[in-house]
Amino acid sequence: MDEADKSLAAYESLKKSMPSIGFLNRKKRIIAFLKVAKKAQELIDNKDVSEDNALYLLSIMTKKNADFQKSAMMAAMHLATVNRKIVPAVGFRYANEMRANLQLLPIDDITPALD
Image (cartoon, rainbow, N blue to C red; front, side, top):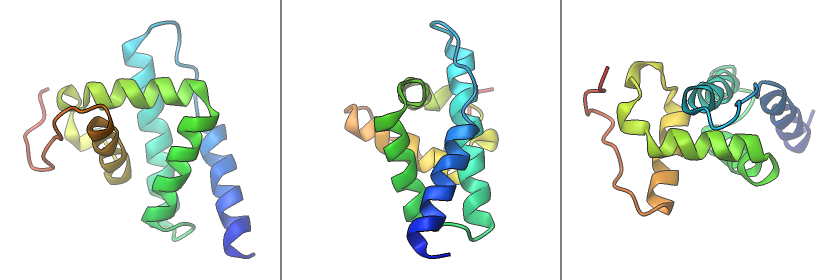
């Protein structure tokens, strides 16, 4: 299996892991982002994709999947209030980069999370 096939398979598994976000439901949207980010982190840990490739796949999901775009935006806006221990590293990095795109201040990796 070449790199393109691995990336396509990884994208499909990320897409399948996307749960419902509800209607204007902040909690469900953040949980949906966390589930997809956890799946992306598992792919990285299993050496199925690199971290850069996982970040790229998350950005593709943001463009192609409106529900994921809404959940990623919600997670980025409320990243400071989410317990840092439950956010996978790749999800934290992606949400922090999305905060920069929204012209919001980044969240330090070592900042204690608000519980």
